[in-house]
Length: 177
Image 1 (cartoon, rainbow, N blue to C red):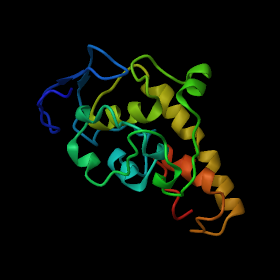
Image 2 (image 1 turned 60 degrees about the horizontal axis):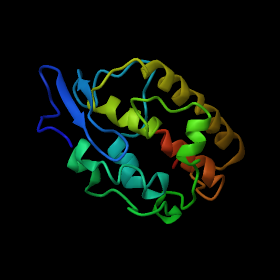
Image 3 (image 1 turned 90 degrees about the vertical axis):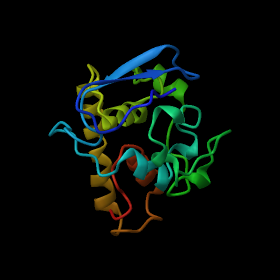
């Protein structure tokens, strides 16, 4: 559960997490929300934008909303029970399940829900030892932008929708590519 705190901070703030995947976990916010990003990390979309557009079949963060600002969920497309492709911006599922992510070693113990959880916490102002690895993973997704630009007409959402959806999962705005 989120402590009562403001998202504009003059000093570090400790966030305590106790949800289905993390018990008695805490992290510290040292930067202002949405500020002081590494120059090597410049996502197109905020976590709130992503949730509103529809990502991860609407299943992401449905059981841990109290950790994040309520405004992120006002217009979020969520599916509390099962991933639903219709919740996604491009109407397709474009991600592997958590077990596949774990098997590939993509999950850091501090962020057991994966990259998007890391990004949400980074956006809020947490900085941690896993930041550089996650930014490298984020940058590696750019190869999909080149593929869309080489094979699709700009803005043609019917061209490679899975790739477009996957890019949204990584905070790249693929709607106009």
